[in-house]
Amino acid sequence: MAREKFGTLTEQMFYILLCLQTECCGMDIMEQVRAMTGGRVLIGPGTLYHLLDDFVTAGMIRETKVEGRRRSYLITEAGLAALDAEYCRLLELAEDYRRSRLGGGARP
Amino acid sequence: MKTKKRRYENYWFYDYCGIAAHLEEMAEKGWLISRVTPFWWEYRKIEPRRLRFSVTYFSEASDFNPYPTENQQTFLEYCGEAGWRLAAEWAQMQMFYSEREEPIPIETDEGVKLRAIHRAMKKNFLPSSILLAGLAVLQLFMQAFNFRNGPARWLADGTALTAGLLWLLVLVISAFSLLGYACWYGRSKRAVETGGSCAIPGQRYRALSRASTVIVLISLALWFCSVLKTHTWWITAAVIGYMVLLLALVFGTKNIMKKMRAPGSVNRTVTTAVCIVLSIALTAALTVGILRGRRAGLFSSRQPEIYTSAAPDGTMWEWEIYHDPLPLRVEDLTVVDYEHYSCQWDARETFLAGYYEGRQDAPPDGSDVPELSYTISDVKFAPLYGVCLEDALKVYDYEDDVPEEERAYWEKTDSTGWEADAVYRLYRGGQPWLNRYVICWEDRIVSVTFSWEITREQAAAAAAGLRR
Image 1 (cartoon, rainbow over the protein chains, first blue to last red):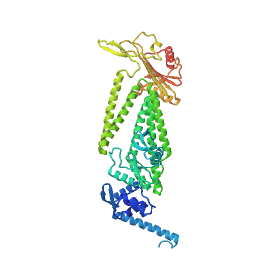
Image 2 (image 1 turned 180 degrees about the vertical axis):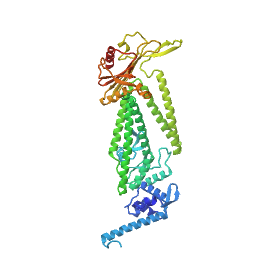
Image 3 (image 1 turned 90 degrees about the vertical axis):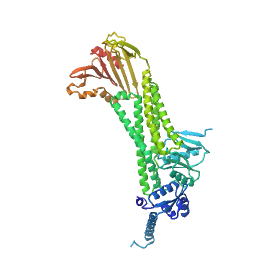
Image 4 (image 1 turned 180 degrees about the horizontal axis):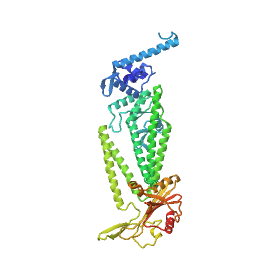
């Protein structure tokens, strides 16, 4: 289910996973992503809550700490694999773009 | 100065855009939503200002929970961090507002938003709408059954007509809301899969919902006015009181349990049990009340005269004798010297039909005097005439068990004297049976039973009385 659901990551999923390479409190992710992308990508609180919940269910992140209602999370191996797969996909897109727009012919 | 305002609002549960836009409009007028109940929305007075509203859905939320769950608290805190404050909740729906000019939307991923809405819909809106539609179908079947068993009587009964119309509206509204949601969900899903946004819930459905509310209110008002004119208005008043009391007790139980901080599951179980037990208990109390009211003569605008007769073995019997004016009496047809006749007349009428029942009986006191009974159906809507006539010419169901050659049947007979469009008479075994006739005039069908064989002159006199 996880692979099917997260086969391709949206920008918001991608940046949430990126943030969680180091342990991070859910609430801080919104600000971190905004800072990381210079305000280009904004994650709404509802979307953040639901995505964190989905990622935990899919085993892509795990809860590391609960202080009151502040919950911290960290990416898992499955999450890292999804992040790497998305990175490769983006590289392939960039490569295809380069070949098509800047010359270099078809793929070998 | 008024600091609170209550309004009846008519929005479908998934109409998050319409609700947010409405709440923004209210805030600009100086009213901030503060509470949502099943019957009204409550607003509190604020300085008129521009607030941004966002309506979200959280499937774990429930009206039965005494306070938000841990997960819901986390969700609320995330929203608070982004500048969104919770104004009110309605089951799985939360209404947030922000004072910021350009706040980050609560939902920034359309796919995630659609999943959250659909999860919440599956928990509340969809099952309740399906249940309501099922209940409406069941009620309409019962109404159709009653119509089949006596179309003219049903058409002339304002309460039955109103109930039929209201349940039909309930079915239409439930079906449209389910269909509307299915269409919206399908459109949104397709759009989201191709990178687009969720569809905006249609204005058409909102307009339909409002129009049906107006129709419901008008029907109820008309029905209530018609009921007030009858002598059984007190039954309607008792039923309305019963419903108000039941709702107050059920919602009161839920609110008290919430105040006592009972867990949501316990509250739901207790409230459901209270609802079932009270429904049964109050229905029983209502039935007893109606039966006692009937015995006390509240069903009738007139009090019967009590006639006491002695049986051959000396036992004394009491009979209720009525003296209602009748359009046709035995005395109009034949000479009779008897003073203990009971004459009963019952009338009901709507814009579709009038249905009148008259009977002149003698108590079984040994006197062998002629008797008379009849029903008059006035069909005001011509296409319904055929079905009413068909019903008048129906023979009893138990005739199906009788061998075919012995079964009772109606046969067109000589209409001389009756001056009618058609006259039918009941036969059995080739012979007239029970002196029963069905007489058809332009928009009137009369079923009449005489206790004696009438002559042509008596038929003419009966026609004159029954045609009036």
